Each structure stands twice: as C-alpha cells, then as structure tokens.
Length: 150
Image 1 (tube, rainbow, N blue to C red):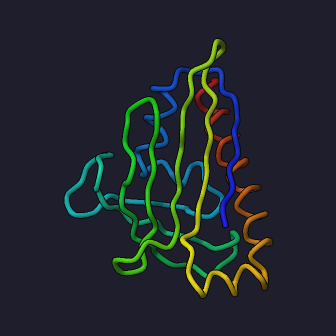
Image 2 (image 1 turned 60 degrees about the horizontal axis):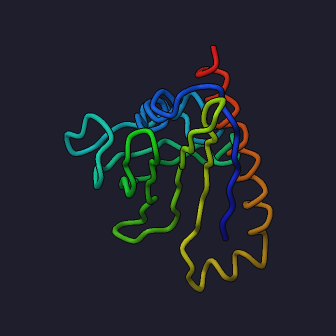
C-alpha cells in the first residue's frame, strides 16, 4: 500500500526542508504524530540518524512510540525515514521538494513494506488506512504551507 500528496508552496525549498527535516517540528504539523525526538545523541537530520515519534493513531488512540531511521537526507531536496518494528522496516515516509517558478512543490508519500500480514490487512480495511494517510498528508502539507508562506 502506498500513496502521495503534492502541495505547491510559495517559499524556497530550503526553508521548507528545514521545517520537515527537524523531526522535533512534527507535532506542529502532523495530525497523528504529536511529538518526536532525536535518539542516540543525534541533534539533527543525517542519513542513518534515529528518532522516535509519539503517535496518537487516528487522532484518538491508541497512543504509542515508534522508532524511525532517516533514509534520505538531502537539504532542500528530500527527507525520508523508515518506521521500524525492532530492526524490521514496516513503513517508509518521504518528502520530495521540487523548485518551481513560484516556489516549491512538496510531495509527501508513504509506502508500507509488503508482507503476508499487510496483504490480509489490505483486504480488511487497508484502503481506509490509505485514505486516512492521504487526508493526513494533505493536512500536514497545508499546515507547513501556512507557516512557510507567512
């Protein structure tokens, strides 16, 4: 399962990237992840850096922590991370920033790793989750847009 949303922002890519790549800002923009913190002494985005996010699923619960690892980190261009269950990747989130004549097109995407459990989940409710993710990615990007266009 995967999906993406693109929002055009009247702001330079570097300004947008700085907000996205500092995961401590996540709680300001995400409907589900209300806080995040760097782990293992990391103080900012870097390939391989780990962080954890505090999630309130569907904005109501359950509430839990997820550990993530940065998988893409190119200032002004892209930021991505994998959500981990132990050492196994379960979900991938990615932001791509494309400069335009009037600012930047920002695309947020997710891709769940394929496995037998996900195949069953996809049959019994996975499309509801996909729809929720698409709606929440649009909210996240619209909130970022409101800040960078001030």
